Amino acid sequence: MFNIDLWMQTGWFNKCVALTSISNNEKDMKNKLMDTTTTYGITRRKFLWVTSASTAGFLLGCATNPVTGKSQLMLVSEDQEIEIDRQHSPYQFSTDYGSIQDKSLNNYIDQTGKKISGLTHRPHMPFSFRGVNAAYVNAYAFPGGSIAATRGILVELKNEAELAALLGHEIGHVNARHTAAQMSKSSLTNTLIGGIAAIAGTQSAGLGSLTSQLGMLGAGAFLAHYSRDNERQADALGLEYMVKAGYNPNGFVGLMNMLRSMSKHEPSAIELMFSTHPMSDERYNTAVHTVQTKYRHAQNYPFYRERYMDHTVKLRAMKGVIEDMQKGERVMAQKKYDEAETYYNKALKQAPDDYAGLVMMAKCQIVREKYSEAGWFVEKAKKVYPQEAQAYYLSGFVNMNQKKYDSAHEDFKTYEKILPGNPNITFYQGLSLEKMNRVSESADKYYRYLKVVNQGEKAKYAYQRLVEWGYVKR
Ligand SMILES: [Zn+2]
Image (cartoon, rainbow, N blue to C red; front, top):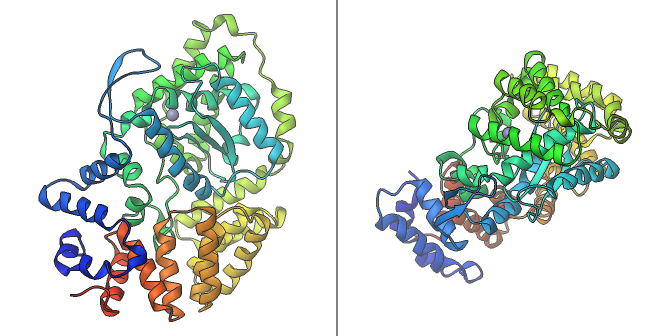
């Protein structure tokens, strides 16, 4: 029942204009809403598309695909690809517990990626490569060229050629502009065009109660879901690129083989990767065949096994810890919280300062409503990785539940500083201010929240407060 039409009926704008500090974009927003109501029947997808595209300098037309050289209908400009990447990739990295703190490993991954990306179809794109702390097995690319691989997958690779294959495949997705092409399809359009707001308003399914309870952004919420044709093309490009950069193409076969066998032995750890990058025996067989035919000449190229092993010494020492965290996440998803705690305990016993492990344990305690225990883990997480945002979110949530509203407010402010633009944080700032009886500041936050999210429990709550306080006339 809480929808745009309702806003229009309530005289919302008349009252809110009085909040001078927040009236800057009023006209703009009103116009957007008017558009929606006058073109009645427009879908939400289309609405999000039109409104944000117009602000971003929307261009509709044909473009030459940088990979195929063929002309294709392209709704998204290169500048928009870069902008979407800039806005969304930091959230995904934070969901994945931030970049690996091991600087030398991260530099090595970045340099390996850049060695390849410089030789590809779009060398001018602002490519960047990093490892992220998540334990599950995955790698992904944003359309501007921000690429990440999780610890879970890095620990399974056997040499630099396999890393080059992994990064090459992701570069393939960027260069063939798969995300931009997918943007004409509904789910991703909602996510990328609607941005954080679309996700905050409608949680993705299957993320478990905790994620929705906390209003957190789900693990794969920002990732493009590629088609099988996209995968075939990214594989072909990945192979081409890695050979061009001087790597043994059998690294690609090794990567495919590892993913194939993991899908049999650890399917839950690799689930998200396969939901975004469809895997099949066909992909493996094609790789074997292409390496033996098209890239026969490169069979003696190096794998750089030692170089990979040298750079991943510390990471590989964590393999058991990473596996315990994977197991913990699996049973968490099944709501077996006692079992999850056991696995996280085991992981933290071996690696007491591991940020991802601490945050996972904090979530496990929060979901059982053990807030003082959760507080302990989350405080430690903030100390070991103060530049990473997620722990502040959880800390704010824990503090709210312990009625420490002042500390909660500080946590949300810190999160906002590190990772600006998350409307859930705006809502929680409003809530913590409300609890401290700072009504006008709270109203300001609720208003800001409602400007970007207009559905769901939080929106209803914020709206009701504004009505109650007389900022909105019924
Ligand atoms: Zn892929």
